[in-house]
Structure formats: C-alpha cells, structure tokens
Image 1 (spheres, rainbow, N blue to C red):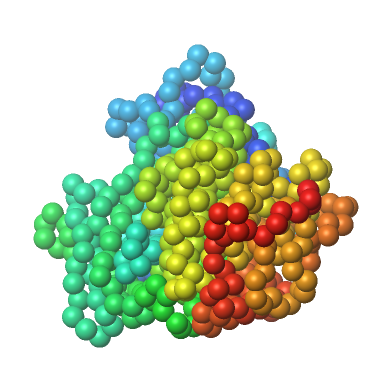
Image 2: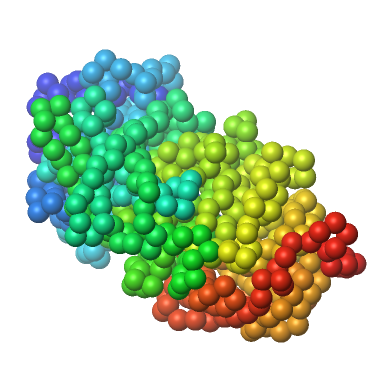
Amino acid sequence: MRSLSFLSMEYLFLLMSILSQCLKFGSGTAAVVHAGNGDGVQPLSKIAIHKAVYALHENASVKAHPLVLGTKGGDSDWVTVEIEFPKPSEDDWIAVFSPANFRLKEFINGSSSICQPSDDMEQFPHICSAPIKYKYANDSDADYKKTGKSSLKFQLINQREDFSFALFSGGLSDPKLVAVSNVISFANPKAPLYPRLSQGKSWNEMTVTWTSGYNVIEAVPFVEWGMKEESQTRSPAGTLTFHQNDMCAPPARTVGWRDPGFIHTSFLKDLWPSSVYTYKLGHKLVDGSYVWSKSYSFKSSPYPGQDSLQRVVIFGDMGKAERDGSNEYSNYQPGSLNTTDQLIKDLKNIDIVFHIGDITYANGYISQWDQFTSQVERIASTVPYMIASGNHERDAPNSGSFYDGNDSGGECGVIAETMFYVPAENRAKFWYSTDYGMFHFCIADSEHDWREGSEQYKFIEKCLASADRRKQPWLIFVAHRVLGYSSSYWKDASFGEPMGRESLQGLWQKYKVDIAFFGHIHNYERTCPVYQGQCMHVGKSHYSGTVNGTIHVVVGGGGSHLSAFGPTQTSWSLYKDSDFGFVKLTAYNHSSLLFEYKKSSDGNVYDSFTISRDYRDVLACVHDGCEPTTLGS
C-alpha cells in the first residue's frame, strides 16, 4: 500500500469505517454560476466529490516535497508532486486537500457536524469536503498517458492547516481515489496573514483586518504602528469568525465548507492627514511570547476637502486566479491576474481602491477567500481596499436578499461581511459612505431594496445630500448591479436593473452626481452626461460648467468572463469595450478631474475625459429649481 505509506493499517481501517458514515451530498455540489452574461462555472463545483469511490492501487504513489513550507518566513511556497500510476488515463487528476485528512479530524475528535450519517451510502469514501485546488495529471507532461509518470508544480499559500495530494482517476464526474500523498505543512500555520486596509468611519481612521489561526483564548491580537521612523504604539484588535451553520445553502454549507480561521480588525485612530505610517500584525501568546507578521506601510487619508493630488481606482467582478495554472483558472477568471498585476505595478500612483462587488467568485467554496486575500495582499496592505456587495457575495434563497437566486453558493453575505471591513452602520446592510480628500463616495448595496421609500433609498439620499461640494466637489455613486445604463441589458429592454433608474435618477439629478459606477456586466461602457435617457451635454472628452446629467460607467471587466453588447445602438453610449480593465480617477484640485479607462493587458489608457468647473456649477437643486425633465425613456 505504498500510496498510503503515511498511514498505518490501523489508521486505514479507521479511515474506511469513518468515511462510510459521510453524507452523500448529491446535486448540492454542482452549484452553477449564472449571474452576468456568460460567467463560467466555479471550477471546484465541477468535481462530483460526493460520488468519489475508494480505489487505492498498490502500485500507485503520490509524493510531495518539501515537507515543510515557508521556512524562510514566506506565506506561500512551491511544492513538487511526483505521480506514478500503472493505469494512467487522460482524465486523471491531482487534488490538493487541506486539512490533509480530508475532513476526518472532526470524526476522530467525536464530532459529526460536517459529514453526517446517511442511509443511502453505496461505496467508500464519500469524501465530505471539496479539494482547495486541482490539476490534471498530464498538465506538465504530455507523455503521462504512456508512462504513468508525471511531475507537477503547485503553489500553496498558508491556510492554517496541513496539506495532502490525492490522485483520482475517472475524471471530475466519476472520481476514484487511487493514491494519497504524504502530509506537508507550513512552518507556522497560524501566522497572521493577508492584511486588508479600509477607511474607518471617520476620515482620520484606518482599519486593518487580517486572518490568523489564533483564537482569542490562545493569543491576544493587536497592531503595532506609528509614523514612519517614529515611536510605535499598539492598538487592540477584535476577533470574529463564522461557522458552517451560518451558511445558508450548499455548497457553502456542505462540501464547500472550510474553517475560515479567525478574522481580526484593529482601528488605527487620530491619524495625521496624508502621512506615511508603518505597521505590523501581532499576537501575544498565553506564554508571553509574540508572533509577528512582516512590516507594511500605508499613507493616511487627506483631510476632507484638502487640495492635493488624489488617485482612485474602481473596478468590479475581478475574482481570483491561480498562478500555478490549477483550477482551470484561465477559463474561469481569465483577466484576474492581469488586473491585479497592473494595479501592483502602478501602486505608487494609487491612493484608494474600490472593488465594487463580485469579489472572489468563491460561490460557496470557502477556501477561495484565502486565495483571494493572498492575491491582493500587496494592494490591500498598502492602500484602502473598499468593497461593495455583489450577487456572488450576497444572493441566497430565503436569506433576505433582494434577489432569490443562489449566486453566492450559500454564503449569503456572511463571508464578505466578516473578511472585509466597511464603514457601514450595519455590515449586514452593505451600504455606506466614505470620504477621500476631495471625493465623497456613496456606496449602495444592489442586493438589498433600493426603491423609493426603502431604508436604503433614505440612506442614498442622505449620503448624496451630505456632500459639501465646496470642499468635496467630486460626488461618486457606486453599486454592483447596473442601476443606471448598460447596452448589455437590451434583451429585457430595460438597459439596467428593473426599477433602477426609475427610483434613483431623480436623486442623481438633484444632487448632481458626477459619475455613477456599476459592475455586474463584464465589460466597459461610458455614457454621456445623461438624464431620463437623453444626453444633457455635448462633447465626449471634456466637460465644463453646469453639466445637467450624470455620467454612467460600467466597469465590470475586472477579471471574470466578458459580456457582449446588445445590437441596439443607444444614443447615450459614448464608448464600449468588451475587454478586461479598470478606471482611474485623478483629482488635481477642486476644479479639475481626469477620468481614464485602462486595459488590464497593458495598463494603457483607451478612453478618457476631463471635467473642469466651479463650485456654483454643482450646487444641488432647490425646490422647483432642477433642470427641466426630458421626455427620454
């Protein structure tokens, strides 16, 4: 039994007897992604892990090395996996499992919360957890089918648990467990990792959120921070987590479940404006010793209204991808890494980032949230990484979402609300406002009711009305779904979400919103300054004076499958591009704003315009003082 050489025969007997109790999850493992136009299917959902059968082959082996990862302090490392199998086929595949025991720990410890007994068992092992990633055995060796030998490279990140590799035959739809590798692990699996910055509830507050394996019973979390090259102070952190029964539906509640560890958030207050701070994450253990992260730095927010160079990046629908080529990433989130890498390349010229919904596309496979926070760490640890709620974070049946689908794969907003901090009054209601220098942002939650009279509608009006346009001339509205205009909505003749413009365009017009940004549709489109379906200002590249309309921008090409445009040539659409990209706003002063659309492939500008104007041009309408309405539809 070389393929299970790390297991004793006694343990193997225990494995077989325990696995026989696992639940056969059935169709709950095959959640299909359907929001947006042409999304792919979450790669892990293609694996019918509930159908896996026990077919260990005595002459098959899987060996992984090195045994210990991160020995030089890193939070990611490369692993080589050597395969030998005398009966190879084209659809053999290697799965990475974490924890290494395929979720048996809970049973060995006397718990059956993850995989409960069922009367309809047919065969072993009824594995109770999906792998965290996979590759086909012939991925790097076209001769595998002839030789039965292959060597694969995987990049693993620290995810608080050990890892093992399993060889399956029978493809993804009829998996047969052939061999299991030795166990490998990180040197410090519980280390504090993947810091995410966010604006706090006041302009001079920065929040730091991170993930670790330490419960508050084991260690006290905190951040050590201060101005660069000055004395440091320590701020305590709160600790949150979530559990399997907090999930709303499969697969998050079944095979997609993975323990998220502990999420810590610290509030760094009374910051000096536009100043550089350094920080590192710490945990004080019960024995008095300390565990530290590496050091990071950020620049604090300008004073509201401060006249300085301020640069904002906005995009939606990015998702994650694997740099080792696993999980068929190029077919699922083909532009994700390009967008990430372009932002990292230009990071010294970025002050704040808005990722406006559809964050990871984990869709209930919770291990993917660690993968995403690792992917964006260099960005999110340096500048505030503000998120909005999208359908792939929130929507689940009977969960209170405005839409009743299961685009979140049963996550129902719980994971996004915990993994990322936003300065909302109630993080379960994912709408909030935030200021950055000369910008005032109103972030809506398109997965909750926004219609006139709703709680969110009242928030949106209050947020727009609170903008002091003398100090913060640039007023930005953000939502995930298109509550404004998109040429990709032509099939239902609405050009946006039903009831979207009908409920909100009066507010955009009254408070003279400069630009409204949306994701959800996976392309780029910019409108003229528009109101009630009609362009209210001529020109494409420069706007000045009183504009009398809001420019609507779809910027959903962050990385997921691209969406096509409809055949209708809309009069209000000025620029369309079905490609991956993001928007960068540069405010030079109170009267000059530069808008740029950049492609993720090369970072070059493909669409741009400027706005110049005086304060009096954006004074909100008083009673009966708005511009006359049009007959546009």
